Length: 297
Length: 121
Image 1: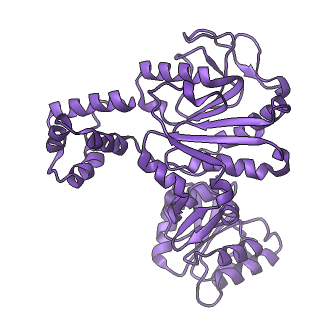
Image 2: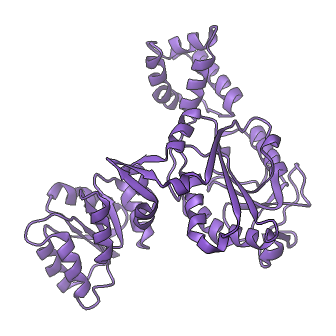
Image 3: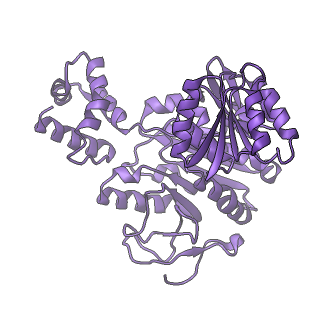
């Protein structure tokens, strides 16, 4: 792959997915895209780039973007966000939505479905507490290929063992040969839909909870700011945003602020603007009225 | 340092498990069947047991039941690690007092996830 080929791929990926590749990611690009090249009958990445530059290349561009942006996911990945979901987010929303009894959740980078299904399992485990409630989970991802896998709800033995307690496995999955399929009652709780985070979110409606984990890290500063500001516009004022362990809003936007002592959890900042600056921390001492700004840090 | 008893009749599996668990800061004691493992537990109870099912002399299931009958035998966290990969075996293991269950083949991430799940990490 020539430097020109690499530069072309970097620009293409940034424009189509927001993915920012530093100059030292040649190995990653080769390992992910050589199989795509071979599948298209091409010998190497230079051939792939020539084809991408040519006419009628759109299907191949989609394949390239999907190959580069598909990432591994686990059930209960990082554990803490799901503790926040059970112990902080849901109690606050159950109190705040007691009249409408409706909660909307968005998994904005759902990959192969483990995250939205984990949330669905958490909701199912809440049992009677949510009787009479309507909780919708929208799960989106850029890649239609991973969403197909997600919809099937079928996972390998390796996938179900990374993070999923064995009790949950035998409770919510059926063994199908050497794979495990998630129960229809959990699958039916999640709606999957392809969506590119670089596009406008408005038509998706408003959400009480947004999980957008481990995706901002791949974006440049400008894209991170734009995505966070658009997320703020679709997150209810007393809603929540969960980011990945290596991600933050700090230094990027004042539209969200950290929830005190809840790592990775953020709440819309009613005083904040798209521009960074309003640095209050949210306290959940009164979940019924959460979130409440508690003063400057 | 926490002690993990690795019980498996395959020396290769014991070696792989030892490498993974030492990387997680466990001190390793090895046993090649349930009988040997029970002897080790009578000397000193470990914090964790990584336990195969099918072994000569005493299998993992019988060992687990015997372990749980020992004084203080309810304390060690027991994680099965076996090729018995069906729901019936998993349910039997949990009923006998297993804390978690690994279906072979396994890797470092799976062992870490399961040990974390039972509060060993």
